[in-house]
Image 1: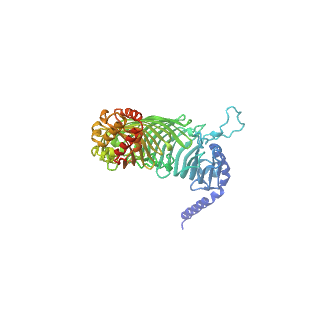
Image 2: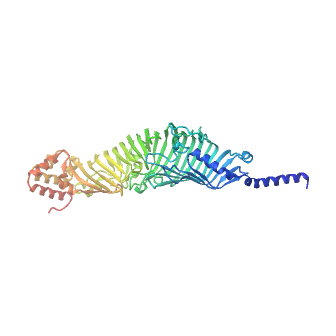
Image 3: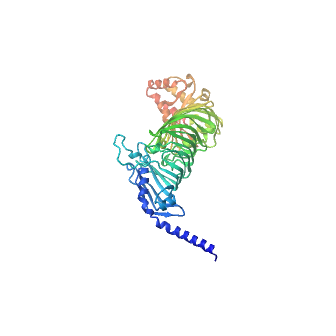
Length: 568
């Protein structure tokens, strides 16, 4: 063996020995109190590390465990725990001068608990010592130990878990596989940061931008400039909507965030798919898309929704209003207005409201106008206002045959396609169901319908209505004419021909929106709901009262004949 080869082998052996021995010669555990103190001062929290070890090859210190305390106003349990911590260090200063110069920090499998209190403050707001900032009126301490400017070339959190909740509730949402990467981290300047996470129930969260410098009073107010992307966020499992009420949907969002001086400007597009907005509803067949522009005050936890647009297909409406985030949910007060929206584009979204088109029927024409108010917490949202459908065609729906169960309306000829001149109502949509008041429908082939009712969480209909037939139809419907004549004889006011206009017949709608059932309302008739469109009811009722006891008896006999019952 040549001398050169022996020298090379000796050098290699020495290097190997050094690599093995040096980590044991450097008393790295002596740095643990220093690290705990410096990081604790910088964060304003109690920091605890496990046993430290030194890797010469990797140029890093490792701790077996890491714990960072929470703000005591929120919780006595740790804010962050981690399986291990790796701190990149400069080797030569560490070996020869025992100086600790940090080049990077990697936290492996961290578990972070983010809590919000009743007034909207977060437990991370006091990170950086903001919660314990000195009183400006107090005399300065003789020897201060300020955290100063913290600077780290690279900070990484890998495969973490974030638990999100409120101090006044035990309910928590869990975000898995959280990764955070930031470079040139400084408490005194901007630095780039990337965050990604898996959302509860599926979906992804991505944040890419810059943050800093850290706000001296509230870390939550730190300036940001970033892009935010959320894909396939399950609104029920994430806590935005109430899953116990059968509400749900999937959210996709792309937005830009610019935050300065505690005010965030957020612009972007949100798409809600498979929405279910009332109990008993089913997923909407088309998405709802919102192009939004909003300003949010991070200190007051309130926001203003600037004029924005909500779209379903080619139907577009305008919305604006305010919102506030405090406690467990966001409370909104939003106005929605839309004019001349294509009805066909909106039909596929109706199942989200618990409304289904009648079996075999489809809306092939028409426009919708709406003026609505959305108010309350997002998980118990209540929508109220006016909705109108105009110049519409309900293809495949023969109203005449559907109303054959109402004896007085049997034989009506409306055609297999129902023409709707106008349909208006005042709505209230809440998680428990839908209520429609002041329903007015003008149907050229029949006359007009009026009334109101509800659609409950089981999609069951309960409507009380009255059909006012046109004069021509009223004359053909002999049972109707019979009861009108009977009432006329009983009251001494003459026959139906003495009254101008058609005849009004009360009825009920039961069943479901997919299979409505039109049934008689005998109680309504007996109470005096049979009247003429021109206002004959006043004369009939007055006459009936003045005719004595015989008049009601004759009227009841006529009611029996109206529904095909044999007169006693």
